[in-house]
Length: 99
Picture 1 (cartoon, helix red, strand yellow):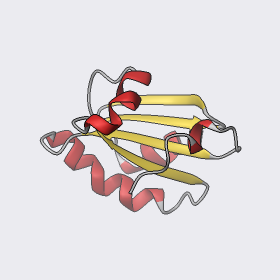
Picture 2: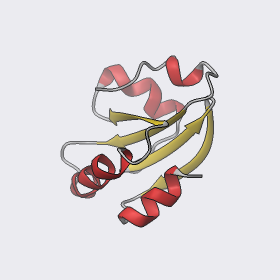
Picture 3: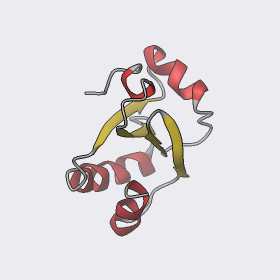
Picture 4: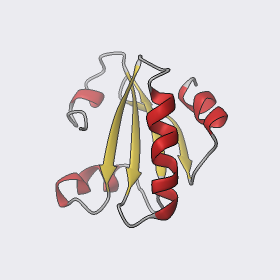
C-alpha cells in the first residue's frame, strides 16, 4: 500500500521513501526484502512502493525522472533529499534513510 501522492508533497515535515520498481525486475525483487526489513527500524519514514508499469503512478515516474530501476528517492518535507539507483546492502540502506 502506498501513501497518497499529495501527502508527501504537502510540507508536513515527514520523510518519505519512494521505491520505484517493477515485478519483472530482478534487482528490484532482491531489494524488496531488504527495504521491508529495515524500513521498520525507521518509524519516521513512510514507504511508498511505485510500480513503474502502473499507468496510475506514471506521474511520479516522470516527476522523479526515473530511468533505471530500482530507484530510491528520499523526500523530506516534500523535497528530494537523496536519490539512489540499483540495489544496496542493508547497512547502506540504513545510512541512506537516515540522511
